[in-house]
Amino acid sequence: MRPIQARISIGAMAHNLRVARSHAGSARVFAVVKANAYGHGLSRARRALTAADGFAVLTLEEAANLRQMGVEQPILLLEGIFGADEIAACAELDLWPVLHHVAHLDWFEQRPPARPLQVFLKFDSGMHRLGFPLAGHTAVVARTKSLPGVAGITLMTHFAQADEAVGVDWQLQPFLREMAGHGLPWSSANSAALQRYPATLGAWVRPGLMLYGASPFADMTAAELGLRPAMTLQSEIISVQTLQAGEGVGYGQLFCAERPMRVGVVACGYADGYPRHAPTGTPVLVNGRPGRTLGRVSMDMLCVDLGEHAAAGVGSPVVLWGEGLPVDAVAAAAGTSSYELLCALAARVPVAETD
Ligand SMILES: *Cc1c(COP(=O)(O)O)cnc(C)c1O
Image (cartoon, rainbow, N blue to C red; front, side):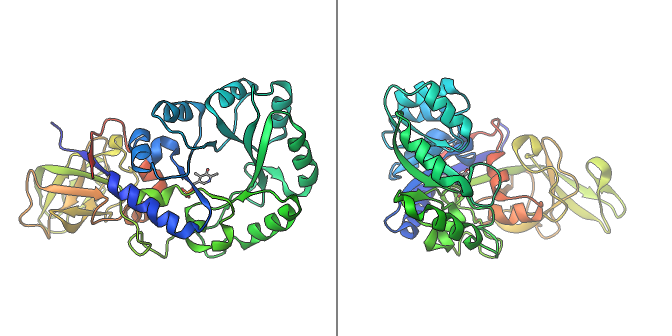
């Protein structure tokens, strides 16, 4: 069997949820499990995160799957409904849609659910992606309250820079100021806001990334945040080559040896979800010790420098990210984010579940 494998730890996810809760105070916690639980598997995440107060997903299908698995907690549809035809299913499955556009209010009027639903009313406080403009809040809240299909409203916004130095205040303060008069519960915090800005807590928090053991911050590691990696992507060396000075390796011959050296060929490529744009020098662990990639990542293989790994050969284990090598470090080297790497784990990679 091809030796690549993703080990996914139920215990790490459960631990990370406890860390999230320790920051959340009296706020309730939606475990964000969109995108197949950031690549970790919806069913697996659901079992690891049973202690969550609710789950947040993107699609009706994910929500229906969670209900089928026996989830009884509230389920939030983060992007709401994509047509009036989805309202009936929301009522059937007791889902809480985010309403973020006037079209949603129109749909609720045209096709009211069989029973009134809890909704999250999303306002745009500066991200300019989804949400009603803050300026029109009085009319929007009044109209939503008047809808017979709405049982209760939680006000919501989302931060564009919670993970950066500029932070959340430029969005949070206007949001809280405009929403203050409504006397309604509210929700704003993602992983970064939850861990850094207690003022963002509100009634519900919405951590995603941290549950999987990655850090949203460039200046703080997941370990420093008390998080444990939930996914370890590992494989093995399947061939060893010896390059002479002046010889290159792989497509494009992007890496060229300056002196004779041993190169390990690892069974992991971009078709497994490893980033093709990871340059020479991207960190790996060979036999548990730090190493680096060489040259261009190909579809099914990548190359690593065995110059400092004299004992390594065919069959030696290589960790691409996870335990011992933060996915954030690999993402930084490859010019991407841990979000993208985790979500991109390919379906062809066999998964082993661990405690
Ligand atoms: C994905 C998402 C989250 C979770 O964000 P993380 O940065 O992964 O914690 C929270 N809120 C909304 C609206 C989202 O779409």
